[in-house]
Length: 147
Image 1 (cartoon, rainbow, N blue to C red):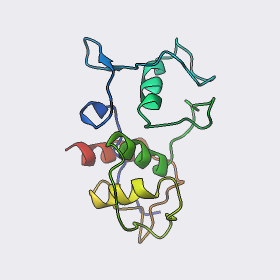
Image 2: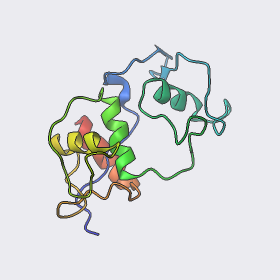
Image 3: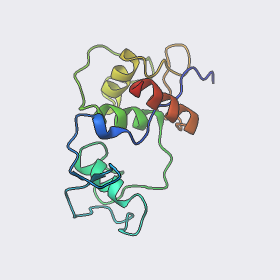
């Protein structure tokens, strides 16, 4: 598969249109909620606050109502969805790639990202939404979204 774009995804959500809760001295958002719906995330996990914050801000709902999947691989569709939701899920029009069905949960996110130049796809008229999003893709998507 020809790789034409990188993924840009990171932890710079602080300037996005999401509620930020209170901030610690290091500038990280603190989740408002203390209720953890995910059985596979514990308070001793280094990502605990990040997961609660992302869930309460609608950036992710987990892999089920009770599971987050912290060790799961993120797909390209999921990565675009995280970015799109962190941006406040702005309205979009039109479609983006032939392999992104209009009914897919990530369709608006991919169209938004393509429209902003965050992604140019994975080949001719393809986005490959179910392919793993590599570290290189993630940082490229973040770079294109934030710079």
